[in-house]
Image (tube, rainbow, N blue to C red; front, side):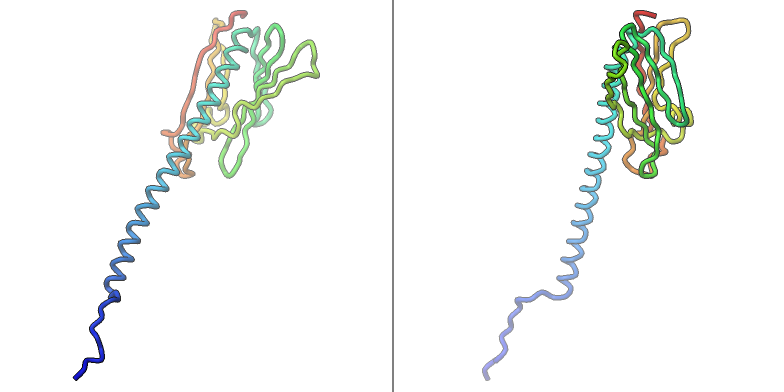
Length: 189
């Protein structure tokens, strides 16, 4: 007799397909976790870099403004406040505005330089934009940017508070709360 059916084993069994899908699922889930971890690390580094750029700008401007200041006064209205720095040539204001964006408290600092000889001419520059607030410290949350004169000295201490968390559930963590402080000595007063 002639065998009409040849024994051809070119297909896959159901068990082989299930094992292949299982291995593929494991590889894809590991790849997703690695990619997600890299994405979070990049976001956190971006927040840290932005904060460092902001701090460097403030350090640059405040060193120049406070070295030549006669007097620093603070005025507030609601959640917003400003520091007026009077120098021999002009008045420089640092306006701090606090608001809520995407369920997160943020603050911005704008430097406004007014020329005393020409009151209509002013230079505005936003130095800090939408920086996350420290959430679980009342003083840091209410005054994220401070200029304080040390007693009986011509030294001003500048403090900047911020939160560098990228994840919503970690924004309240003390580990993510950062403080940058520096001193400037006034040559005039």
